Length: 198
Image (cartoon, rainbow, N blue to C red; front, side, top):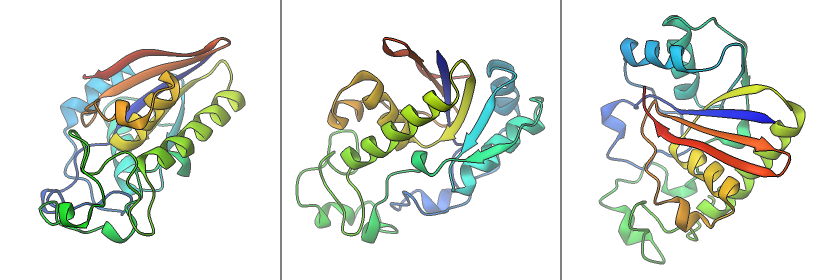
């Protein structure tokens, strides 16, 4: 078995919230030390740690280390980066609907099938995340893995584990600094917890 403990990064700075920032590298807001300390107490030790290429995931991991968790090397895993919105990066949320080719998902800014120009659909992200999940599960059998990632990629991991379309997984709301736990067992994926808050 391989156990995955996904942590969604801390909130980004307020000036970026009105815009579609997706896979761009926007800064994280000051990370709450109390929440980081509670995360430190709930995550397994020892564990292998993974972050995405975006600095908000590294900053979140480092805040957990600073709050009592013994620091570990941070491996960068591009497969878990947030959905790439291509030419729509930086678009204000109130402008984005005018660019869509199909109705947005009720609980996401675009439909699962919509592919932004020079970007990727949620379904394409699911395939990317699923490949990374299976690869890490095989490479680290029997280990505990902590992955600091993004709301979109964590939903992609859930869609892969549950074998459901992304339009179903988009009904999950993944809170900042929450934990989603899943296990790769011999017979398949087992989702242990979703949106566990410290």
